[in-house]
Length: 195
Length: 426
Image 1 (tube, chains in turn orange, brown):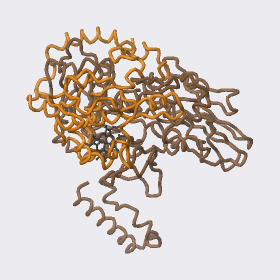
Image 2 (tube, chains in turn cyan, yellow):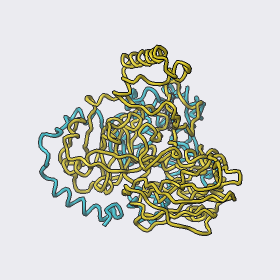
Image 3 (cartoon, helix red, strand yellow):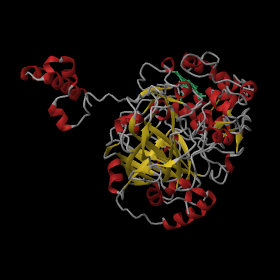
Image 4 (cartoon, rainbow over the protein chains, first blue to last red):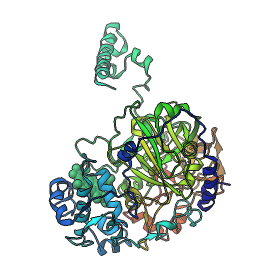
């Protein structure tokens, strides 16, 4: 049986792997990382807020940071400029998805606010990534979302509130819930195209 | 190459030009050629192709305005498929897509690979430690999901009648990858109950992150350190790359430094913003992974010219994310009749397979096409069949400005009476 055909089957398969794996087989190869080593690399934030660090910020606090560190590439109001793409959007962009000129922006396309946090934190400002504090990333995320009227100027973004933000195109995906993303053959995808 | 070596190399090259003059070789009559001929001592240490072979990767979707000064790497560079023999892509010509990010300059002695998250024993490895573990070597292609797309920023050059296979299909390449099965590493770490996904992360400047179902991680994914018999090239992920055979290129994380075992897709930038396919109902399909069967005739092909009537070997490449290529058929009459091509060894799962077929050109107009079938029985579709999968018509495929991901339609090349060959996709 081709394993990748059945993710559900895969979970059963996995359970027996885990059972098999109670004792490592290759001694002296690799070691246990220290807590600090894991912490220094563990930067991913999931859609339900897993991995988001302590800290907080508002759009108001984000405005001067954006002006100083981001506007040069993305424009003063996140409207896009020569190098960086537009970060704002809404219903007009969602409507464009039904045309031959679909537009994808953070405000008009991205389904999760946590992805905005995660991406700014890992990749921006371009050329100088990894230099922002958690508070700055929360504030910048809030600022960008506020420019698409997704959050208000004083809404506090933190590990609890950010996953609850409703992004305008949240229901624009198939399958709609990430929990329901199973193996693509089960979803009826053919030739790399899903129904 | 460190600066000292590079100085030494220039010195040697100049020295070679002088030596050529002194020895009165043909090089002395052609100083320009002599300068580009590398020093023989250098060639003995590390070989190069003949300086008269000029085949190179060509930048695509390359918007210089968007590129930063310190980013010499174009968004994407396509591989010259029409110049390649056999089924391996030379590492130096493997296509590159890295969203404008330059390869980080990684010291393999310093590089660490971490497995953590929902595992009993988080583990951290050096590259040398990974090389102590049981290894496998397997032929696999890697292909960008946007390869051959009629829409998107690369659309115009792909649809142009002047397009070559490099323009139409250059975002695929095939290598012999050597490394440790990811399943082995995950077993060492002890995957916990309830784990359903992994996130794989690179150490490039964007820390590219990709969610992958654990089924694939435990099936045939590789943590590779070798590529075609040498360490992976920097632009291909040196020193470590995750290889996810048959799946869209974006999953094959370069400069791999971390895998976190998790219980949901983490919805990273590329998988939520760039790579879902938008269909005309306005809904995006996300987490499409497996690439369908695809083939392209690389000779004779677009941009070439047949010098005379007579015998030509038709030659091309076929591959499928679903498995091994079982059959390739060729038509020289625009799809009226089809004949089996010969498949050349090695025929490997999820790898390019070289095919050939004899053909006599009678000087008349002809349309050459190839159609492959993989070992799942899946047949490469026509353009009309691809349109149907998209719930659209052919006109949509022709006109959309969106990337048509996983576009694997049969590729026709039209041979004109004057021997010129042109792209006839639409």
